Image: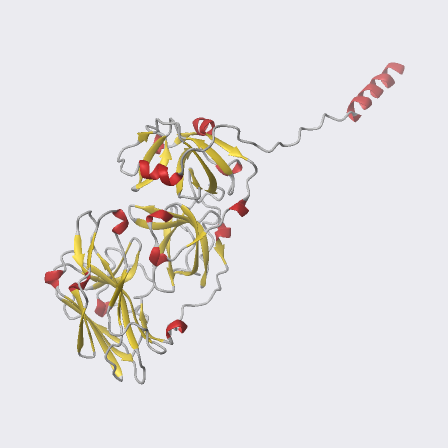
Amino acid sequence: MLSVICIGLILFTGACKRDPEAPLLTQPIYDGPNANTTIAALKEKYANITDPKVIDEDLIIKALVTGNDISGNIYKQLYIQDETAAINLGVDQNSMYTTFRAGQEVYINLKGLSMVKYGSELQIGFSGTNANRIAWEIFKEHTKVNGWPNAANLTPLEVDLSKLDASMVNKLVIIKNVRFNNGGVNAFAGGTATVSEVVKDANGKTLDVRNSNFSSFAKDILPKGNGTLVGILGRYNGGWQLFLRDKTDVIDFDGTDAGTTPTDPETGGTIFNETFGNGTYPSGNRPKIADFTDFDMKAPVTYSEESGSADIRTATGISASVWLPANKDITLKIAGIQTANKTDLTLSYQLVPNIYNVGEATNLNAMKVKVNGTTYTIPSTPVAINSTDDRNKYYTVSIPNITPAATSTVEFIMTGADNAFGFRLDNIKIVSATGGNGSGNTIIVTK
């Protein structure tokens, strides 16, 4: 009996002993070589590669993580940026966000890694592997964290969809006052594949928002109304795309319906504004002008195009617009615009030249404009493709002091002999400026 009691006391005493306390987490401190190059310098150095190129110099960059796979919307990619530029890394690993969180400072030793091009854009990878991704163990050898992650260190760059340029590729951005074309109707990615949902800003400029069916918010319905998006601004073969990092990048959508009576307080009042709707019109679904029903401006305004050559279509980075095919004489006529008692009228519209390959060129004056019987000749404006950045560019033409009338008719006249590649016509607007627009009678072309 005594032996049983002793054994019990021994067991009880052992159970009361506390395990040694686990050591406190220690902030990671990078103690390797200092950064000796920037992301911008790296991209400039390898700008002209076509095949993967192994980095054979001792190059080290310091950057902040801006995008990872926390929601599943970004797949086997890590996005980083420094004060000069941004780039992504292809890494053959899931759940990288557990170590590489938004706002984490990293040092990357680039020697032995590769510069590759995907969709015509540079990224850091590893030559000869699946999709040129860096194996996880190799990635960890080359990439070291410094300090704790702090998302407060990330300030998204506010961008205007009409002014996107190469310096913004892969940066963390914020885009305000945009609306999903299918808001309140479609899910972010309701099917079994990654899809694009289009957002449009107040000026009719559009952007593809890429959503993976594996993301944590794939089945959520797109928000309705106007709001703000944050995300990684990518570009694939010249087409701009936005990648949401998680659902918190979708901010303050107001749930309102799109209005059909536009206003523009900066110009004293918009009388006419035609964006050709929010629909998507790919090959096989391109209505002719006579068959199109989704015009922003309704009766008494009418639209006609007698040749039957023009149609409504969309393309990557280009919203619904009128397609004016090459080598065709076309006149788009818009009648019944209510301009009675309006003064200081300015007509503006946007053209997208259908030039794509380096060396191709055209001239915006291939189109003439007639307003209430007065013809306006656009000044010679040559445009050309010098690099992939020149593709799908919107050019805005503004014609001040157009001829007034109680009810106005505008005709867009495309001369086939001067139109060797085709154009897209979009975002037609007439405003009544308070006190005039200060441009006299000069026709202005901007991009």
